[in-house]
Image (cartoon, rainbow, N blue to C red):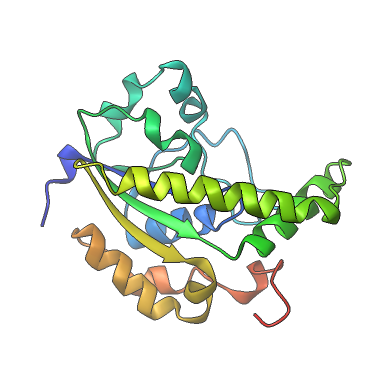
Length: 196
């Protein structure tokens, strides 16, 4: 077992990649969540967003809160990971999802907000996201203070029992894996590729 008091736990990935669901799983498993509850659940995230607004200020140098997050889990999008302070130790659960589903989910969210996206733009975004993920993974592989578990959202939805166990093993802290297994539900998996 590792010392939770010296570790900051992070759920990361692209927006719409399943990060909120993983936060819900970790909460169900018994972890303390760092969130300010400013952004509440809505039609795009029925179980809530689990966001902490100060995370968005990491790029501007607001990182004082990170040391106080030891022992807790916080959601940080992939583009902001590089701004985390070097002094801490991190265990990161990095969510991956079919890029076509991420784009479909983003487009649906924009449509609900009166800002319809264009399906014609998807190829450009797929290329952009793929390059971003490649860059982030390469960077993560060179960080000595970060342990990373990559979790495929699509596979997790098919095998929640297997992945709940994998996550608990990775965290190396007491977790209620059975409670975690009950969080991924098909009714929340709405934007999916045809063969999913």
